[in-house]
Length: 339
Image 1: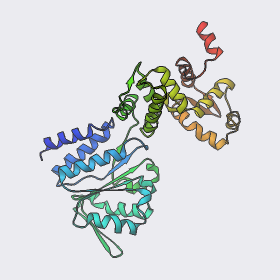
Image 2: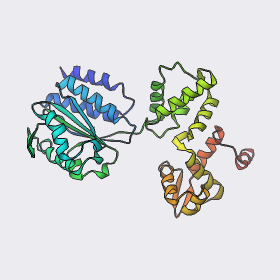
Image 3: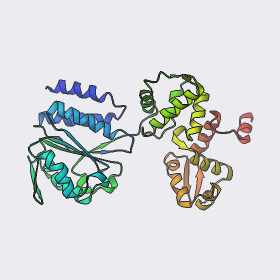
Image 4: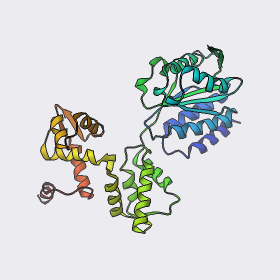
């Protein structure tokens, strides 16, 4: 297969994946590079939160490797399921490597056994030194790792828990949070066979009520289907969207009802100490309240400067929710508009 033919095949395969253009480009370059480099596939470390498509990407990647470079079946495991080093060597590496090609993928690699990760680190030496193989023994088993035949891919959303020496042996592939447009496309794809009509840009409104990952899409699809079945209709308008959102208790930007309460308390009572805010939020334990604030801090809706404070962006966010009738209006907003 020529470089041009392989490039077209790769582009067509990855066109099924929404966004993640950087990751798709790096995977494409890795495969095309292997065509010129005797099959040598650079090991990859895919980094991204759950719901960003790590598994889908690696499944397509492995299929492309098989089609373009030959064989190399995908051996998929999660970090928790690899077991001890002996179990991993015996159950996965020996069957995959001995006189065969393979793509080994370990998702949630930060949860893998420390002995397994150390073994992988040592096994990766040829990829750094550009050697043709490395030989390793464990008990009665002997492993011959050949970068021209064997490829290791790790996935994680907690790179800080992986050893730096291990990370340095891998090409880093960072996944990005989906944009509103991306979330809309994912939601549309999930509903494509439902014959549902969306009016007044309602699909975008629903897409905006997420945190940039596709993990909760199935719940939104179920909520939409249930709402339409009860209402005996096929079209969703803005009022339907507001009702679905209230039932799901997830609002624009993916903010939850519990987080909305925190914003409203700060708007009503002003700056708050952690314990004060926790008490006003229904006697929530301070640790629970602290965890409840992480996303609000990330989105810049609150800040912590000794006390918890509502930011300008947080105030505007609440006003927007009121204008869109997601939360009840308050007198102060009415007075500002009249003034």
